[in-house]
Length: 468
View 1: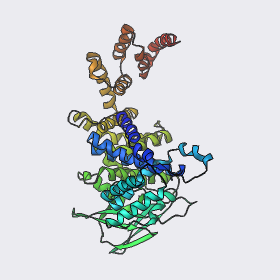
View 2: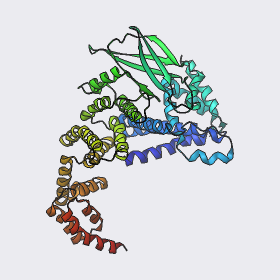
View 3: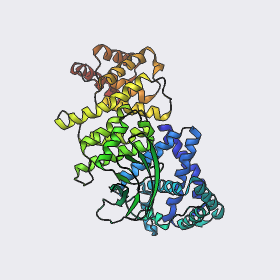
């Protein structure tokens, strides 16, 4: 993950030479456009350089997850201020994280070819000039028209309106459905976001088809026969909203994902389903009307037992982090129940990763998946994980080159010593004493054996005196 983060930073800086330096914003309040374009094309450059399309899926899921969750509490819209005294506030919060998402929505609405053509025209006409956002928008509208696509000015509501919409799908008779948008933020009464929605309809016979609908009013009613069928919103590279399915459809989605056909749903869409399910389940805690039943949530997330795609797992790892702070995994009833349910989700991927360790592609996302699965398996005290860590620790002493990553070394030492007996603990202690490897000393405290702790205390004082 560190390599991806560094590549992301470098790619953004290089791309910004075109959008931030070759063309300058006439006002500080428009700097977000070029920053967003640099992020968008920088991420695409990384994907092509590393030759891994899954990395783009990860960028899309991560950007949407972070922005949607921040947008619940903060104003994530691009700043429109003109007062020089407020310039510092432009850099005080990552308010531009939403911009690449909106740009991807625009690209999806008018096609990649039309979008890139508009970018080329924009760079050619305004090179070394000072421009506003509206010059960029006008060029995109005109270019889209030349390709046969009409983009309305209502699209700009995505940068004018605060927060994001909730979409609700309702069956209206046997042949019509209603797609409505609303906001759960009581201080604002928006309801006219412009968007194009791609819907996948899967019938019980196994057949499926897609339909695309444009929504620019509060609600739209259109003909679609889905009696008894399952629907899934295909967000592709866009979809800055929460989608509220009916209870019946949530159960159908859960059933489908728990089947062997779950990979027919793209990793981005699987991640979106998990993210929305997590959101609506947490909403139950705050008595929000869209709250999801906890049993439905566990049915949906249960499919993760067979999931080994880091992109699809990403929102659930974030849910793990949230739950670990909200409800500590203690011995009381609720904590024990949640701990057990989360542990059950990890068992399948953990075993798959152990068995297929040599057969899985060794890329950055696979490494991230291993680290997260093993980290949470250890945190939740999954016995096979603790035993494997101990084996890795002993293997490391026989062959030090077997672990060359600092992260894996820390995992093997600390987790391996958690349930280690005195003989294993002494192996590490003697290595420390023989070679004066003081960096090993903190790991000795990872044990849970009281008798070993008593053995450890005198050495900790030696280590403290060494560092004074």
